[in-house]
Amino acid sequence: MHIAIIGKGNVGSALQGGLTQLGHQARAVGRDPLLVHQAALASELIILAMPFSETDNVVTALGVAANGKVVVDATNLLTDSLHLAAGFDTSGAEQLQLKLPAARVVKAFNTCFAGTMASGHVKGEQLVGLVAGDDAAAKQTVLALVAALGFDAVDAGPLQMARYLEPMALLNIRLAYVQGLGADMGFRLVR
Image 1 (cartoon, rainbow, N blue to C red):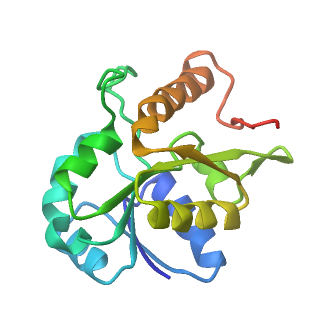
Image 2 (cartoon, helix red, strand yellow):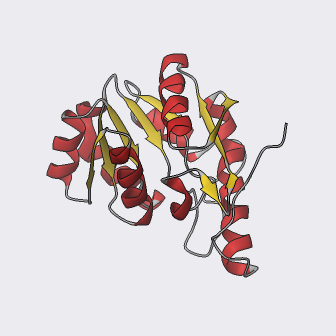
């Protein structure tokens, strides 16, 4: 699959490495609007792996190139002071869907750290890869990618569930960096 990753930081680079190892044509681009648009045009699936604060700029750059495509929102809905940028009556993913109404937005990859994204594991343990979305086919495509990367891929329900996945990411980040547990950790679902 041809995959455009918008963001060349830790998350974008980790996903590019993992997806390339699986045989996908994954291309990570930075913030240049022309490169974002071109990468999206040439892709079947788009992953947003940039800071949430760049969402409006990326949406503008994507334009119609996102129409009909699966757009994976891997962003963290955080302020610079590590607080949620929205409450629990919406989510960044739902806001993204409103801004890209012809795209098929799915929330994934935001509840784990970049260091685990290429394998879905940490310290020999398989992490849960929670995926939320309203379009069943788009969600299945993303669940398959998440599982192929090595995660325990779990359907977290409709896109509205991103309202809870985004605070879960905040908890993960605060545990790692504020509480000092470090980023060599993650969530596992025992069932």
